[in-house]
Image (tube, rainbow, N blue to C red; front, side):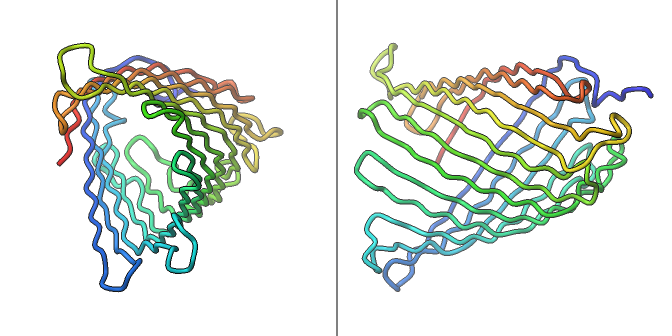
Length: 275
């Protein structure tokens, strides 16, 4: 059969915009706050218009300070989630779900966290994705994380991740486990007396196994992927609120389905602003 443009490798340029806003309101009852947030992403590609994307996600829910129960420096949050994605101007994905987040500042320098999340994902076919609806189903995500402030200017973190997708088609249902490690180093600006610069490095590896074979590729063997990624980010603040962000990343996927094996190099530069 003939490979479509979504499968064939190629280089391209895009412009993107991300934004987010978060609100927190402390209730009169001690130790309870209501949090809400909204984030958006849009990207347009020079050549591959089939990748033009718009996404919006929101959450709302209470955060409990567990000190009221004698558990100092621990919080528990319960959020309702909803999101939507447009691709090529068509509705591609709508989801709704819930998330529970636990954070514990064990010592002044050590913190641990845990998160469990469920979403029902409803996919819709688009102009170039005529079988996207087969991905519709339940998604479960779990994460355990640890962070350590090694020095005032150097931080290390690690996280364990697991994802379970149950789609309408077995060959799109999968179980994934992964490990991520990150670091961030803050250092004095080498130019003038401005805010400190931040250099961050993140890397991750994951294993993904699918429930059933894709008969169009291999009727006898299910897809199995191993994925590696690394990302280097340099943040150069102009002021306390505006910064230049430069990133370079590499992603590699090995698969027993040769058509699913690929690598990708990305470079981006942008302006970040907070208020």
